[in-house]
Image 1 (tube, rainbow, N blue to C red):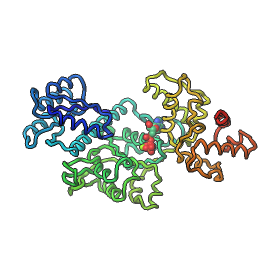
Image 2: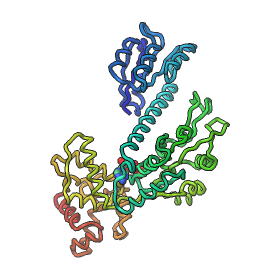
Image 3: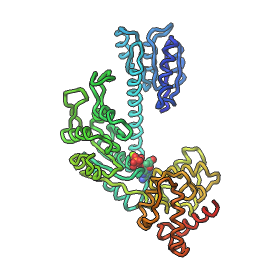
Image 4: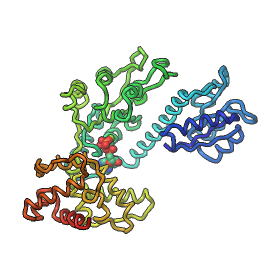
Length: 469
Ligand SMILES: Nc1ncnc2c1ncn2[C@@H]1O[C@H](COP(=O)(O)OP(=O)(O)OP(=O)(O)O)[C@@H](O)[C@H]1O
Ligand SMILES: [Mg+2]
């Protein structure tokens, strides 16, 4: 989050206090912090640069905080301002709000107040940006914004998306990590009648349990310690639009029950509030876990599952749509070269073959990362097989769960090879399997390659790498 923040106060201690606050929170470590000791200095700075957030004291020599707020709302309407006032300065606070301040805080400034206000302001700004980005997408690319692929499995998914998008049905998108669940969710929103309304995401895996609830439903002032003012949750914010509940399996059972109520009754209550609030939000959920398994373990409600999965969309792993790999590679090369500001590179046929043979346990995200890494580390204009030697063969530090995945999903590999997988790298396991299969096939490379599910060329390349080691 690279936000530009200006802190205006004639008291150096207050300036330092707020600067320290931002520096002490890792999420804000990239923020650009500037200070000004009075209103005139602040206005001069605002003329030079667009800030995202400005804190300003009220009484200062020369121009006052109110002058700063007025100047900002007239000249930089997307900048949010927060007035810092002495206790009891209710009048000026009201005036500041009328001039367009986002909020005011009273001295002594408390860390908790700062934390809450800054979080809300940044969230709101990001939401506005995200919605602008999505709207632009709708205008420039009518149908599927960024979903690349011509294979049957992915075109089937797109057909299903086109069919369900215009309805109001709740949708459950499943698929392994990195298969494009979020991308498909966004496509559903942009192809729906709600496309000009808000699209709000909440990642249940990234938030602690107790926060998911307040994020979703909001809370009334005083509902719990720290609830200093009424706060609107994401369900309310996304009214008329869509909400993406990402990684829904991470919700606890209690919250699942509340979610079921939103789906069935189309209403909920803020935490600490008694009044039910009506919402018309389209729910899209994703999960990379098998929810039926979670149901049998007792960690996911069956009734919620049925409600969510009226139309389930399963995104196939990349290894089930290998023919999309060349398309994806070319598109990623084009996009990434452009982003890196380098001339567009190409890729050898041999390297494409090699990438098509790999099983991609991290799916499209992993492919995109691999291309990025190859582009960074290859000096030549053409990516060749050596540009990808960190995949499989020479990579020493792949996490073991990837190797598990690879071996587990390849039915041709017998269990007898799966000894002592723990604590070994993918490269080591792969090498051992290759040599064992060669032994078994009396060094018949074509047959061994077939058993491994790769081309003979890939096998030969691997062996070449082992010889060079
Ligand atoms: N068909 C596709 N065409 C182009 N890019 C894609 C495609 N599918 C996925 N991507 C890209 O791959 C990356 C991962 O996609 P996304 O975040 O949607 O996956 P996910 O299934 O939500 O993964 P996770 O379970 O890890 O959250 C993104 O950068 C996305 O843009
Ligand atoms: Mg995701």
